[in-house]
Each structure stands twice: as C-alpha cells, then as structure tokens.
Amino acid sequence: MALARLIVAAHLDAFGTASRCSLLSMRTTVSLEPDVLKAVERLRHDRELGLSEAINELVRRGLGVAQTDTEYTLETRPLGAKVDISNIGDVLDLLDAE
Image (cartoon, rainbow, N blue to C red; front, side, top):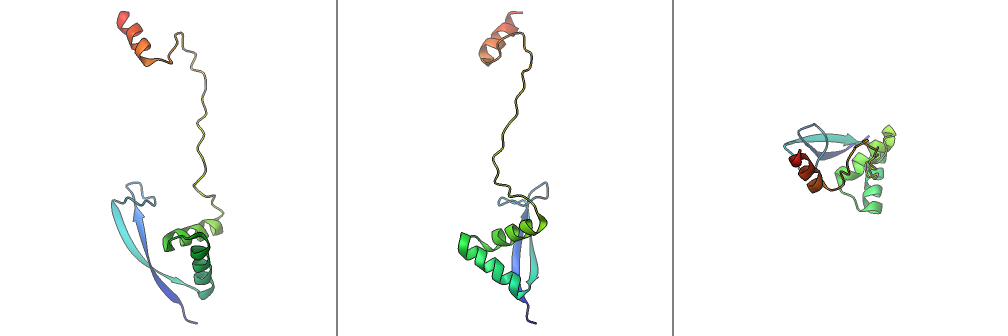
C-alpha cells in the first residue's frame, strides 16, 4: 500500500503551543494513509484551508477537542468597594487627598 508523504511545519511559541508567530520552528514528515489524505484534501478544498489547518482540524475532531474559535466571556462579580471606582482618575484623586 502506497503512503503519501507530506512535510508539515509545526510552529511552537514559548509555551509550546501552536502559533503563527513562532520562536521555535520544527519540520516533521508525516505519513498519511490514502483515505486520510483524501479527507485532508477534501477539507482543504471545501473550507479553503492550508495543509496544517486541515490536518489540525481533523486531529481535533478525532480527539473530540472543541474548536478554539469560541468567544470568551468574562465573568464579573461585585468587589464591594466603598467608593465609586468606575473613574480611575477620581479614585486616584481621592487616594492622594488622604
């Protein structure tokens, strides 16, 4: 059975996570079975993705990892401040006066 051989560039940032802006770069040869290569090429064509993006998405699907494109929502809680802290200038003036 013939295997397709691809060169995949993986970029790592200082924390070892994938990043387009990299401090460390490495190249790895990955052997893909023909059915996997077809899935990668189909995804690249359908979604207009690059090779690494398509492979990463298929791997995440296989691992059951959710996409990282989710919106982040910050949870807030009251601080119990005794003064109005919505204007930092007023707070600094108040602190300087004491």
